[in-house]
Image (tube, rainbow, N blue to C red; front, side, top):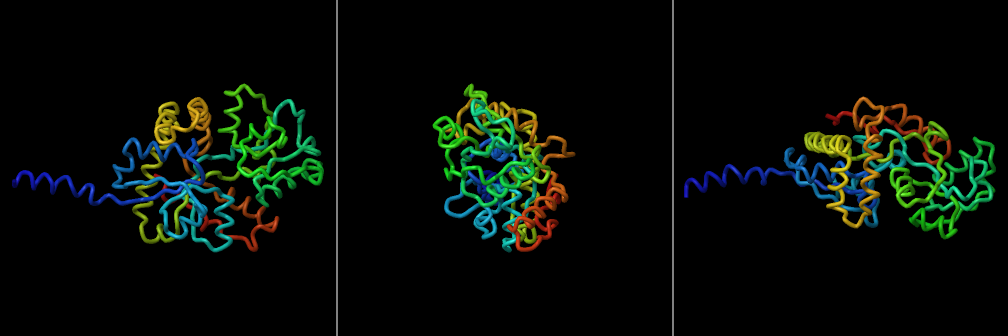
Length: 315
């Protein structure tokens, strides 16, 4: 009996001391999130004494959920964090999941679009964001095109291929790491213009991992342990993209296996890219885009960008 009691005392505290942590995604699980699922599956969070639960947002956004304390961490975007800070939501970006913006505008190659000027007279598949519209108008004016000649069609979250192949819209804003990769697998030729190539101001961090100011102030050790394990998860995904893809598929079996694997291979080169380390964020990137949002009227006043992000918790 004494031996059994000793064993229980030695083993149980490990579980009793595990800290419950919730991570809220921005959308359904995809290759932007792989490092988190890798860290969960390979026990990296366990090593840090963390029991991590991954959830998807419902009526509230990930920014609102994290700010309210209903989740300790979340997936967001630089634009959303900037706007949230402007509205007084105390959230902070603690790492950039992808170093450069891998989104842009795409269309079927058969559409005959060769440049921004060719967007005139075309139907754009919009999810209804004012920033989305302002971005397109800004780019078109920069390249001497008339944004008044674009037909905005509000299609919500309609799939790019469904929309273009069924003539619902002619071009749309996509993440190349998913739809761009999928186009090759599906054998569908597309045209594509990268946002970061159209104007440096749009080379912002998307997506990012966020936490709250309260977590940073009251539980910095948990933030540090979470980031240590998450860092290992993304480094594994960088070094072992196919194995990482299969881990993601365990948690999201509804995803297309071929697209997930090829997307993971693509993102394995984009996660860190030319950064000195994965997750690192630059002040000038935050400042540049915040100034643009302010100039376009989306921010009533400039935020203090140094409070919007931190590299403090990167290993």
